[in-house]
Image (cartoon, rainbow, N blue to C red; front, side):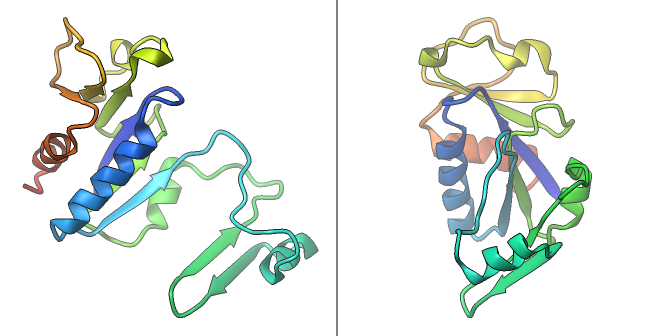
Length: 165
């Protein structure tokens, strides 16, 4: 499968860009999936719900299914966090998987950068970043630079880069 990442510091615009890219690419007829890495604990379940009660009771996996969607929750308990490749192996085949986070992986990436964040550019230490999207002009960078809000141009770049356009 084709894989392309979106990276950047917290509040750099990654999630908003991911949302716009998925919307644009699926409107073009592509089948797109996403993987998001969270550095914090998260829960997709709610206290008191049946599925939460199953997990709390000790179930290793809980599948929740309806006529609209299904979700499989896997409790790691004392297991190690799955690797990026192990997570990818669980995904069904699609035209493109967009990845938010997973900065240290080796797939091609776009860096989101906002002036207000004030952190150093990741591109200076990561040669897998092949394009930059920012809210300011950035000079002396050896990759294409797009306006962070120019979703169509960014989408075109990614699709061309991945051989999908």
